[in-house]
Length: 253
Image (cartoon, rainbow, N blue to C red):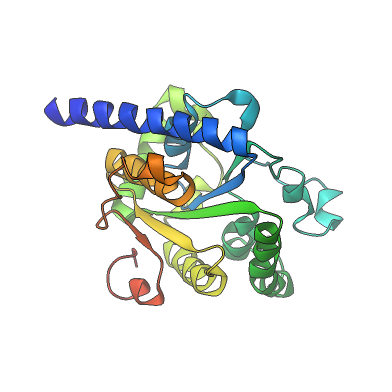
């Protein structure tokens, strides 16, 4: 009970600072993209909900794009995502993003080897172009253990309130665990950059992960008079990606 009360209080305090940040960002014309990637069940939906709960709906958008249409499949790959980029004063959160091409598209053979390679080559350039257009990018990889993923996917299947979260891909998430790990590793190594770095988050403990993500957003985006009041995220929960993390236990194998 005490831990729950502490979490609720900490979350409320951080959400106040998020509102203060958005007031500043709207006045300054800031343009922000936040990318959430991770395995099925890693906690993207819940984390995004806590971030957006008290923000201005007109200036905050969540893009969770469906499978591309036949027409979209013939477009330049990044084209359907460009349509959702922010204007001045807006925050756009991608609940899965162009990185589908390096994850599920690769593991499930939804894209050719040439398409996958082109993406890994082009993504850092695309993101540099966004930065040059004064769009600030924050990229999160939410990392979950295999056992915890299995538990959460099973809970989805047995909870009627979570029926809309169940997808056909849930059934292969565990079977293709190693393939997803290999895809994640190459994606992080090849698309981590100074202008758009990856931030990794341990999400087996959802509440700690949510608090760490919000703390990081405030430190990454807010002006000093806001972020100086916010404790930095716990480094045991959240860290900037580096290649050593793949083998030293910081990322799930």
